[in-house]
Length: 302
Ligand SMILES: CC(=O)SCCNC(=O)CCNC(=O)[C@H](O)C(C)(C)COP(=O)(O)OP(=O)(O)OC[C@H]1O[C@@H](n2cnc3c(N)ncnc32)[C@H](O)[C@@H]1OP(=O)(O)O
Ligand SMILES: N[C@@H](CCO)C(=O)O
Image (tube, rainbow, N blue to C red; front, side, top):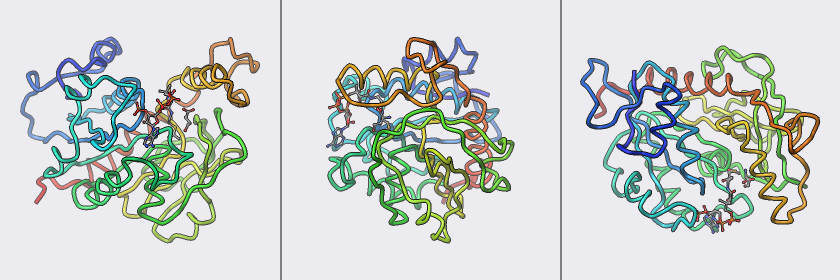
């Protein structure tokens, strides 16, 4: 079954090359099972990269998934063209009357700011509050996960002594939950952040289930007991080379950072890193789409 995306989105060609069945409004067809409607609030500066990474994962399903991209109206993006946003993105005002079966809120490179100092924070709060009634399940990534823990559960973030970047071994603390169905007891995942959240505070909140942690990088995967909120503090969606690009960027800016851990073969930054997390990434996204979105969402929203 196809993934239905805006016509002429730049990611289309590459997705088709990867044999992901893409269609657009013109090629859509009627089905007995209604399509799932997923909205992606893309807060990453390099929006096109994130679009491709997420569509790959959402397109790997037998369900028809209609994608809407949303950006924040209260922030003017420097790293993506206005034409791209005008053509492919919607603002909250344009979609708030609608219901969505799922939503993804991406990461954002703004962890050094207090939440309230982020220029689109009030809009984020509005969107997160709206999602309680208008979205079945929301999957949050990295800063998006920290924002959800803060806003919905009053759990703050704190600064790490240095940037935590690399591929870390994670283990499951609860393998009975559908979100991690099929996961190995240990798996790899990319992490790239300067801040973290408290494991103790999450464990103390009876509404939250801490599903996976790493001895080196801390809390990784949290899900609310009602399935409404999934929080991933790393970047499962990253490509093999994404951490290398971030490392090169930081080094060229003169930032004092360590080489990403467990990443480059022999810790040689000129060697090509291997992707050792892709299968668990696919599993998590298909579990989320199946168990938390498709099986939970009303066939007809009221
Ligand atoms: C913790 C996480 O979630 S990690 C995810 C973030 N990582 C990435 O996005 C990796 C790729 N990004 C990058 O390499 C860099 O951000 C670059 C190269 C695109 C730009 O870097 P710089 O020039 O140093 O920063 P720049 O001033 O453009 O700001 C970067 C982004 O931070 C965000 N930002 C910065 N200040 C603010 C603020 N006060 N309020 C809200 N957003 C802000 C914006 O999203 C901005 O990009 P945009 O204007 O295109 O939306
Ligand atoms: N993943 C991010 C961390 C910054 O918040 C980066 O290196 O761009």
